[in-house]
Image (cartoon, helix red, strand yellow):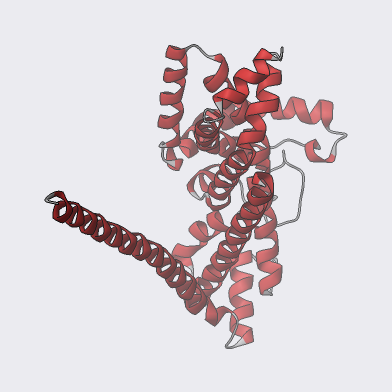
Length: 317
């Protein structure tokens, strides 16, 4: 009988801790929603002058920001959206297979010591600031890859993507996409590795016991388990590529067109890099227009994350 008051006190304490934890978790969730709502409201309010007011003033600001190549908002933001999606998509296309291969090597092929070393290096690379990648791209990659892009243009120029002349120096979409691919590769690799190594050990051993090779075991037991996580990691990398500013600004020769010629300079520009380049000299109307393009980028990122959630849910079903 003497233990019942102590048990009751312990139970009440556990319930109190649960209530506190629930309140903290709920508060954190509400805080995230409030922050998202605040960012959205800020972008809408600051971008509002770009859609109302004097049409002549707005048109003049767009002409100034676009160098006379557009006089309407859709004509101004359209090429920027195209360049943003093109560069980020190409970066993801280059980074994804390499990231998946590295994650599989670390998790299932490398010896324990080498796996630990590779994991540490990958995690360190994921923390490197984007400006460092931009410096590496501008000072090292651009001078040294020009010859390869020229060779690619000569031998594969019949493909519209690689038609020349290749830019010299190579401040082109292809070079920027390559730098962004290197930048997002550690992120995708790190998350993918953490997902793949959690594949059920019993399923792996069962596949091997039935005579499957290691690759067959990975294909049958590991990749299906990690499919949703791999997609999430890819979308995380894509999100960083979509919003990258400094690396693009330091490398890309900006343009304002809907061009798929990856090796030529002055064809495309991204929204984030355009905002960084134009903001210091923009007047109040120009700032509103730039914030409006930032709102468009915010919507694109939101759509990408929404689609990623839908794809992940279907992959996990």
